[in-house]
Image (cartoon, rainbow over all chains, first blue to last red; front, side):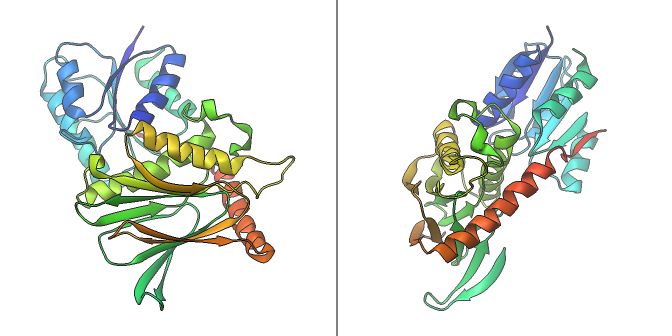
Length: 121
Length: 197
């Protein structure tokens, strides 16, 4: 079973994501900000990271930067799931190494389809 | 959203329509008129700033309270309305842990598609559950009932003035606006931006 780390400071968003990703047959890890996710990911394998941008401690862009510097997550796909649709922030995410960008509000079935496309069933 | 001048308070007045939000640290009034829609007014007492949204869960009359957080098409707009409000307050310097909330609206008198609808209750229930989940205290709320509400929010003080709207002319007008918004969101289904780099 493939593992997805979801990172969002909103418990509601984490619960919603967790629900449909589990239904889709994935194992789910969660972090409430970039720092917490990074602490878990240091010693844990994940097939995909789905992260918000605006979070306390370490934001989503900072998390991408750190993961791309780390040995075990240099190539792990990272999808950004955010209310930010500003082109400049999206470009920054892309240059830091994000795999894709999903602007909220989002359709769970479409997100699941993108997840399948990126990491398979 | 449109700006006007509030003569009684001698302040700028920003009026929200369904689907809109405003955050500010300025001494203004944010106002709106609610039927079955709900508004959450957030206040940051440390920075004396706040914001308010105005949303509904499209087609929520056929979902159950238990399904509120299962990211149905209906709930994602509520989630988005709350997130964008909080995120923009954070951008203005607020910390989420300092935010306090007041919740209004969710009247059950509108929408009679095929039966008496509970869409108003679903909207206010969603807002209250979201705030509980996120650990944001609700200082006061005025929801439900069978009337419209006009809200004036003073975001630098976190103060609300509320007026009940009970005339049939006002109710008809609010209902028409909300129905239009509800339909536009239902039609919007599937227009999200997903980009793979």
